Length: 298
Image 1: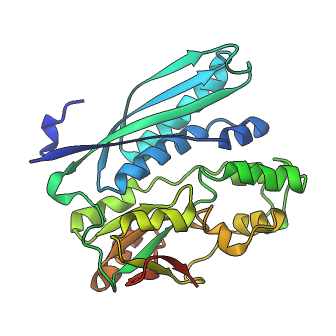
Image 2: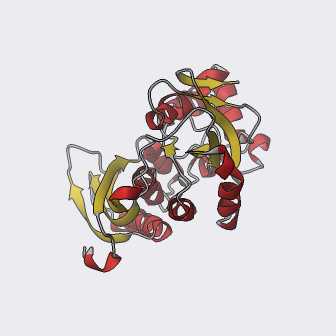
């Protein structure tokens, strides 16, 4: 990949790698494999975007028990779609057929993204201060974490299937709701980075609010999250009820309808929300930075 044409003065490469986890098992149950590749790309590019990086290229790795060309074509089509959404080149990949390691109808999917940022513009959260506001960008659903619990709660404990239709989910099949691909935030965040208003970004993945938000906040500070400042998606209410999960514990597992959290100076909040609105993002102020430690959700 040729960096020369990008015009960076002090380019710093930033990379991330991830997989899709047991969401693959839901794809198998639903026999729907054309969006799972988007999830794989999203989990990688969102992580590097949280550092202020522009994704450059992506590579995927598929391991399977038996090479099923029609199935793998669906998977790779999703990867390509995710790369288009992220503005990233798909420069290669590997498919490994490993009978004995995987059953014939099983596969695993992982990948990695490499991006670039101007050294002076890397977003690391170091300037976050008390009084800064936290802006949440909506998620599209469960995204790609917590699916071991999702499957236990919905399929094992209450006996739903991927074909179950629930009024709470607007009449959609449960499998389709669960397989809604992880949102890719690269293009939404890019104008904010160019405007220089972002102090920190947290990608809300495994560990939910409780584990991910503190990663961007300096020691000695905390995030105070205001419940009711954004709509919690119906799928999370279904999960909480089905699994008899404590409401606060849900915030330690799932994204609860917020896929990215941005920290910035309170004076920049209105400007940032307006920029995001131009990108089609219905962002909202969901909290603030305080002088205690951890995450407080009220």
